[in-house]
Length: 407
Ligand SMILES: Cc1cc2nc3c(=O)[nH]c(=O)nc-3n(C[C@H](O)[C@H](O)[C@H](O)COP(=O)(O)OP(=O)(O)OC[C@H]3O[C@@H](n4cnc5c(N)ncnc54)[C@H](O)[C@@H]3O)c2cc1C
Image (cartoon, rainbow, N blue to C red):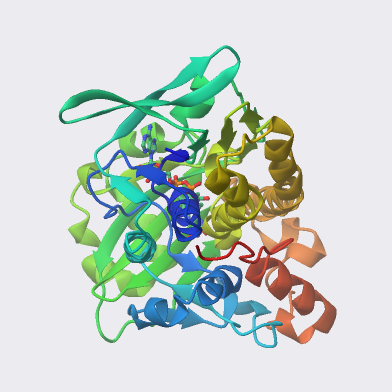
């Protein structure tokens, strides 16, 4: 193969599509048998909508049932605070599309299947690299029929936060610290419930609610490593705060019968100082694990994929060797957005989430600017702050455009 990619998440799937479209022979491996998993977030931001538009896929994407959010709000004890409005964002799209991630990945891989060079292997788990001296020449994987290997000019690790291939390449990320984990569960949604996804924050308690039509996907935030303590206190230790945060969920809270009905997701923020080896590169969360804060990890992963395809497709198609310096160019290009985004996530984590989890989200103990009861109800009325917030959330730092042509 010209290229083999481990990991069928947003980064790997998008890179595979872009390369196949450019006439590159590419195999994408996904260790699960389907994309139907709940744990990856649902937000497609304007920068990714723009990429879909450039690929001629925007219309098809927008046919998937979705919910449009033109802004971001936070629900506090003192009422709703509008944090940012995306209206007026430069470009064609000024909203976040909430789409279950499995639908997004299905669309991308189905589009890739239209190109003859694309091959998708499901239930295929990459577990090692093939090496010749310092260079990586492909990967080894296992599936239901046993052990296999694929040789390729370029091997890409897009296998997420716990990347196996990154570890096999001897690349170790720097951990930047996240104060929280997330307890993930669902409750039925009634037609009379509110419509929009929301962030609910109160002293000692934070929850995010995602509307998936027939049910709410709920993320209850707990202090890092706190799941054992929570389970030790019994199921009411989860039911009670959820019902007090969102009283209209109290009538169905009993449907969380035990901790078997929930899963815990560990949150990490980290990044590699070096993303590559000869013949090998990491992208997406494998290069820089993102916190769920601002819901921008999917979009960063997609932007990495676009930048990678722009830089590498020509050489891969022609069979020219890819110098490690070109892989370094990719790292250099994507490091700035990674650093800035992670810095902003860490500020929010430290100023809001950490304090809230320590029950310090008490108006009398917070600096004036972070006291929700004193904040203006509508931050979007502060023009400069709103312009900066909408650009950061909607387009991100250094948005990428599809430059590589269709073969
Ligand atoms: C609790 C939580 C909520 C989040 N919510 C949001 C959100 O709402 N919006 C947002 O933009 N971001 C969100 N994020 C961040 C976002 O999920 C990631 O930044 C994004 O998914 C990264 O994409 P990726 O393709 O790099 O990796 P992933 O999405 O992790 O995909 C990696 C893929 O590789 C596969 N894989 C793993 N190992 C192997 C292997 N050895 N062989 C083959 N396949 C393998 C996995 O099954 C997976 O499909 C959230 C993160 C967390 C922790």
